[in-house]
Length: 278
Image 1: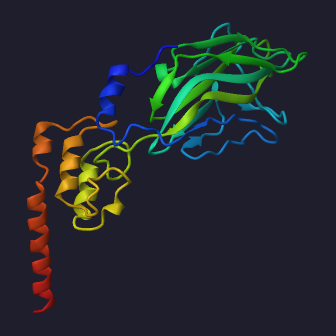
Image 2: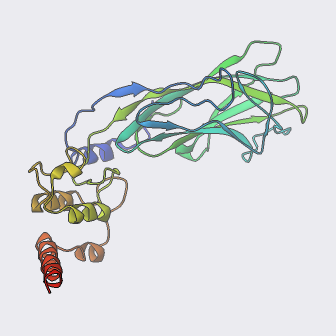
Image 3: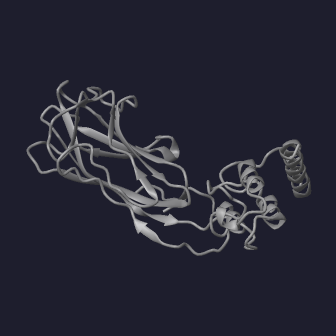
């Protein structure tokens, strides 16, 4: 299966990571609607949204996610769908390879369905024939182009079309994305742990200058034990790494050097002391 992220870009990014090993990986959990239609899995490192409807109506069916008001036309209407989103938390990444789900239509429900994802802007996906009410829920599997090291949300959408009546429904159950949640290595200089090295990390360094280095996420400083110029140099070397582009030369030039910050901090303390004892 073809990777969506360029191998060369991954290799370049790896050069600025602190350590190359991944701490651990856990499989992604399935959606199983045992009692209501709002249940979501819970897992460290990953936020699961509930399944939601857009331009569709709720239809009662205990133990499944059932919707009505589907498209009567013979092609997909991209304005009506059921969707859910997987969002990796800060410091975690997603590897995704396929999605599996059960579905079933009512007697007048949509005869055809499609599932797409946000990675390619919902451009294409799996087209399948829905299972009629007279049969057990049918299982469908979409083996999509793999997603590697995703640090931003990935959304899946289910479309239905070809319904023969306005009251026709389509239900889903056992929705499962195959993949894993990985705790990634920290980026040197990423002092606030948001996955990118930028001016926000400089602010964290400046505000904690002279204090214990333990205020930074593990592995992002210079391991001296104190927040000092060594940490500044680590930040400066990694500046622009991560999901945010490097600032312009003019903006970068306006960032004070560490000696300037120390001088300003000392001046501030002297002024404060002078007013205290007047």
